[in-house]
Amino acid sequence: MSRPLIGITAYFEAARWSDWVREAVLSPPAYAKAVGKAGGAPVVLPPLDPHAAADYVRGLRGLVLAGGVEVGAAAYGGEQDERVPAAQDHRDSFELALARAAVEAGVPILAIARGMHVLNVAQGGTLIPWLPGSLGHERHGKPGTEHVIQVSVSSKLGKAVGDRVEVVAPHVQSVRRLGGGLLAVAWADDQIVEGVELQGHRFAVGVQWHPERGTGAALFDALVEAAR
Image 1 (cartoon, rainbow, N blue to C red):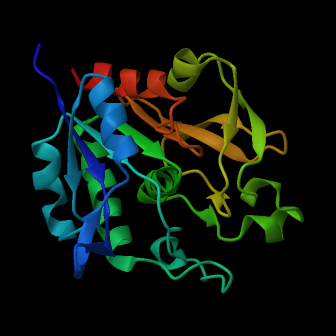
Image 2: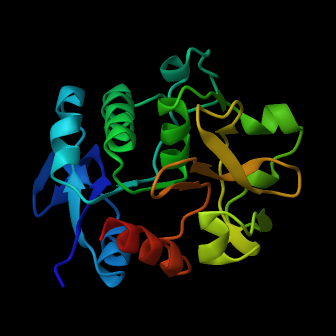
């Protein structure tokens, strides 16, 4: 059986090899390894022309919207919080166009951390730009802090991971208003949304945590199975 081609979003950053320092297209290898282990053929997508998003999608059987720097508030008509790192506008524009094209084409999507925010904004939703300020605590943003996520058992996410999952997922932004067609299907104990799904889509799942980091094989299995 042939391996379905799964695109993985990436970013431009300075990188060093030998004596050279150059801008490079970067993607943590954990994404590609997780896709490959699940039976997909991973391909990294540089954040270039948003107008080419539909062309990318036509060549793909599945899409991973990967993690990274926070989505800029301008993408959803908000006001940039000074405590949030500067947005990567080129990446926001490209990934929003890519997400919309994938939804329209019915291409399976796994949206991870920042990727879940991209999917939500692409569907017309908004974000909480600085979560600690809204909640009055910083539990969600502390690196290495485990917390328990409750998952709807009737959802695609729940069928993959069960009704309860312990994750380490530091984040300073979160979903505020859900985008069109999206349902919240996972929550932290303070009711912050930790997982979403797009109604009527073959497989369009977003999670706030990082399943590529060794504990989320079932989600990549589900993505690749949908891509077949």
